View 1 (cartoon, rainbow, N blue to C red):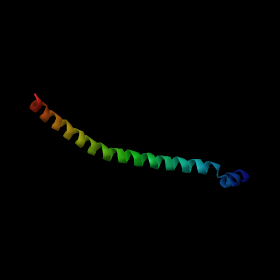
View 2 (cartoon, rainbow, N blue to C red):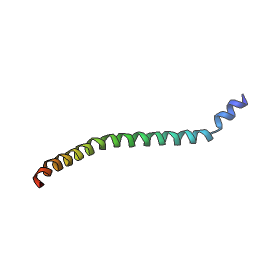
View 3 (spheres, rainbow, N blue to C red):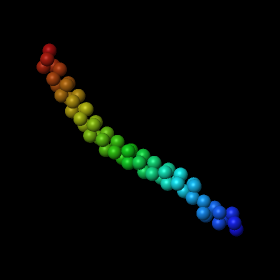
View 4 (tube, rainbow, N blue to C red):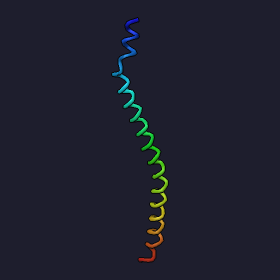
Amino acid sequence: MKFFTKLRKNEDGATAIEYGLIAALIAVGIITALGTLQTGLSDVFNDVSTELTSAAPAAT
């Protein structure tokens, strides 16, 4: 019984778990943000590529 009482009062591992959860939430936020930015950046690069391709024959 003393083991369970001591285990319940020990909070050393709780801090590590909390930090792990915070790191996981930050990672999910970064992945979500990068997924959103990927679509926008892809559109911008495609527009630039189209403009460069259409401008190349005019220069020759």
